[in-house]
Length: 366
Image: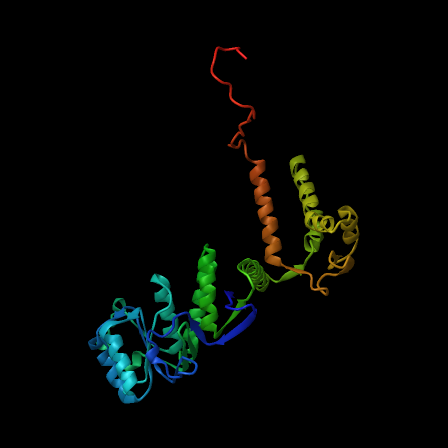
C-alpha cells in the first residue's frame, strides 16, 4: 500500500521482481520518451560492495562486450571513475549497460541480493564467499528475459533461475516467517516472498488532503491485514455470530469446582458481547437480538446495516477466523492477568482546592 501522487486510488500489478532502486545516471536511459532503461536478455552482475574503479570491472566488461549482450550492474554503489567510464561507453555505443544500487540495507540487502541471484541464475560476488570482481566469469552472471528501470524502480521479468532452487528459497523464507516475532520483519519477508513468486500488486491510495489520505490509507491497511489473516486460517460468519455459536462448546465442559463453574458462565456471557454491542450501537435492544440469533442455526445472524436477519456468509458479512480467535485469546489473557493481580501501583490524583492561596500574616487572621 503506497500513497498516490494524485487523488485517484488504483491498483498496479507488477509482473516479475521489482525493487525500489532506479538508475544511477539518467545517461543510461534507452527510451528518452518514457525516461527508462529497457534491457533485453541482459547479463546481471551482483556485487555486495561499492564499485569505484574501472579496473575492478574490466574482467567482466570485456567478455560481456564481446558477447554483444546488455549488462546490468547491481551493487552497493557505483561511483567515481567507474560510473563516469560506464556512462561514456554507453553514450559512445560501445556498451549496452546500466547500473543500480542494491535494494535494502545491511543483512536485508545481502538477503535480497541472494534472492535476485537465485531468481536470475547468477551468483552474488562477495568476498565472504571467496569471490572477487577480478576472478568473476560470465557463468557467475545472472540473466533474465527483460529488465526495465526508471528513476525509482527496477523490474526483472522472467529470470533464468532454476525452478527447484527458487522453490527451496521460497520455503526457506516461509520458515523464517513462522519463527520471527517481529511484525516488521514478517512484512518484509512477505514482500520478498511475493517478489520471488513472480509478482507484486501495489495499491496506490489517492486523496484530496493529507487528513483524508491518512484515513483512507489506514482503512486500506486494515483491510489488507484482515485479508492476509483470512488467507492464513479462513473465514467465519461475522457480526459476532461465530463466537455466539461457540457457546455450544462450553456445554460439554464439566467444572471441577465453583470457581471453574463461575469462569464458564463468564465466558458464556462474554461471547455474546460483540453481537450485543453491535445491536446496541444500532439503537436496538441487544438481549432480544441475541436471543433470536441464538435460536437460529449455523450462519444465521443480524445485519445491523439493513436491520434484517440473514445468512451472514451469503450476505458477505465475514470475519477472518484468526482475528476472531486471537481476540478471544487476548481477552482471556487480560482477564486472567487482572484476576491474578494482587495489587496495582497507580498515581493518586491530587485534589485541588481551587481557592486563592492565603496571604502573609498571623495564623487565624482574616
